[in-house]
Structures are given as structure tokens and as C-alpha cells.
Length: 289
Image (cartoon, rainbow, N blue to C red; front, side, top):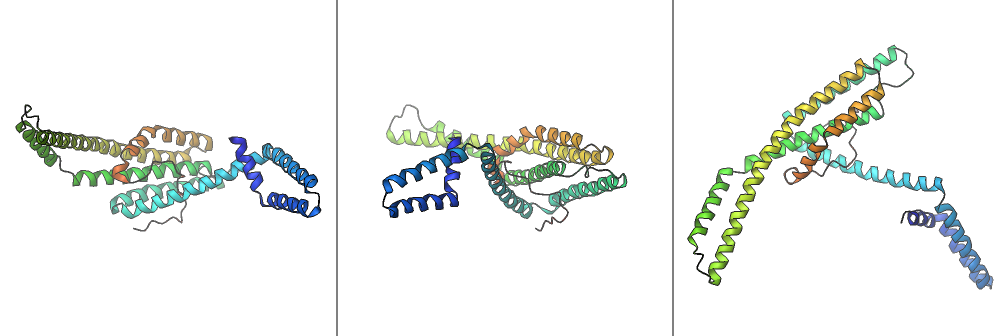
């Protein structure tokens, strides 16, 4: 399966197709296609075999596919970013902007410290460090949006009304005699039992949403403090590798929260966090609601 991918790419190369069909055309007009045709096909098979199994060519194909995948994920994240920033209320968006600006300011301080010390390495918050903070800020923004979505869901859902519906279904179900085995009574019983179960499921879903909101609120505060700490640490400790490790640890500690966010996609409408994080640590980025 893997080798077939490389051979397909090698075969689809336009220069290969040009040479192949040109050789077959030459075989047809040569008057001896039964001699030249097999030679052309043999040369093609040898070409595909050599190129398809060459390590450098395989690395090139893999890199091209990975780049295309990253581009697709980046486009997906940009769409999600636009959706979130347009929907978030002003206070939540301002909270994110404040945190992001603090990171940008500390990044600038760190860069100035490095320049003043005439260090050969780049600023501590460059390349992988910036990518790590981009991911953490992206997670923070999504958490804010998840909290906002859960608040809307809970505001629009009345647990009291759901409980009343459950009690009504239970009351009507008791009025249906279990001894009545008529087709009409059986249909009524099945309908009421289904309504009762639906009400119980809705109530359980509401309680779970409340618990998830509490978790998300705690995680918003925790991640905000973690991001501040990492940004401050980049100034006090000129150790890019250490900062990268700390970013990875924080991101790893959020796996359970990401799972929770995926489970409540019904309320947020945002896909799981599997796309590339947008470049939030770039100063030109502006959010317009």
C-alpha cells in the first residue's frame, strides 16, 4: 500500500507520462511495435521501480503530502478562528486579547534581552516556542468559546420544565392499565415510555453540561495562569529547550479537557482540536467582531 503511493506519484509525473506516451507513439509509427513497445514498457517499469523505491523520492512525496495536509488544517483553523471571534462576546474576547498582548510584550522584552547580551541564538520565544504558545493560546480561545456555548445551552434549557415533562409522562403511563393488551394501549404505552426516556436523557444531558461548564471554567483560569507563567519564564530563563518542554507539558495536561470539548461538540459546533493552530503570536493579527 505504501509503495503503491510512491509508484503512483512517479507514474503521474508529467515528464514520465510525456516520455511514456511518446515512446509508445514512436513504437506505433516505427513499423515494429512488437519490438519497440515491450522495450518502452520495460523501461517504464524499471523507472517506476527505481524511483518509487528511492529513499529521497519517498521523503519528497511524504513531505509534499504533509505540507498539503498542514495547509488544509491551517485553512480549517482559520475558519474556526473567524467563527469563534465573531461569536464570542466582548468581555471574553477582551480577556483573550489581554493575555495575548501580555505574551507579545514579554516576547519583545525577551528579544531585547537577547540582543543586549549579544547572544548568537534567536529570541527564546521563536520557532518551536512560538508554535507552542500559539497552540496554548488557541486552546485558551477555544475554551472561552466552549464556556460561552455551554452558557447559552444552559440558559436556553429549563431543567424545571424537563422535570415537569418527566412527571407528566410518568403520571400518564400509570393511567395505562398493564392488563390492557390491546394494540391501541400498547402504542400509547410505547409512546409514553419513549417520552419518559427522552426526558430523562435530556435532564442527564443538562446536568452533564453543568458539570462540563464548571470544568471548563476551571481550565480557563488554569491555562491562563500557565500561559502567563511560561511567557514570564521566557524572560527570566534564557533556555529555549526548557521553555519548549514546559509548553509540551502544559499541552499534554490538557488532553482530558480536549476530550471533554470533543464530547460537547453539540453545544459548540467546533470540530476537535486536530488542526494546525493559527499564528496568534504574530503582532499584525487583529480580531474584528
